[in-house]
Length: 290
Image (cartoon, rainbow, N blue to C red; front, side, top):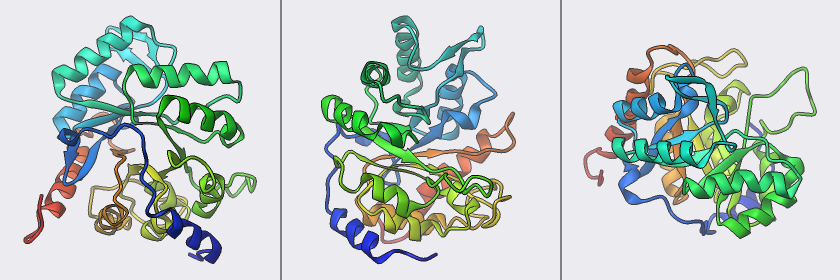
């Protein structure tokens, strides 16, 4: 892909920036990364079941998304930033039981209206989240104000390039950088490497463009670089997972990595576990510290 020189220089300037949000605890690390699952991987199940399945896969962290059913006993009740304190307490208790840390929430629309946006940040604060994931570029001023107030990171997510919608630019890491580069250091990218692959982009090149501004990662493995690419088991596709891990470590990345496996929906715990095993195994290469 073509990397814009001015944006690369800006990214390198930010490479030394340390995100100042409350760090994710070290007991969430696998192979040096705060690794777990995006709740979307288990969208056919409830939040409570997603926590269970994340634990079964070997993950130590979870990223929630808005609108997942709360529990199998209450399938009509959704879990999001409108959740009651009782629901949040129940989720926190189950997280503790399974040894899982909630680290992020999204992709969620953050309104420009401060009072409405604040509700999302209050929810994140109650869950002691590291970050929030959004694509609400139009709300950047409100987001920056609340990031500073709540000390919670915000990552701008990328979906794939849309041939029928040239106005959609989030797929382009150069565009994301242009949005965040002059903002608080806690504002950056949620790097969805699967959607980069579907946009025919090289994952490591994209990470380098956004160097120092990666807040979180949605970890995929895709069968090819095309709009029709689909998820495949870790290490069997084109996302260069080894290169992604190396680049994140080069950047001293301190955010969360959320496995997002969009296939085999009813029985994909083993697929998610494959990513945990890949990261753990890669980190444990001879001569390296696991």
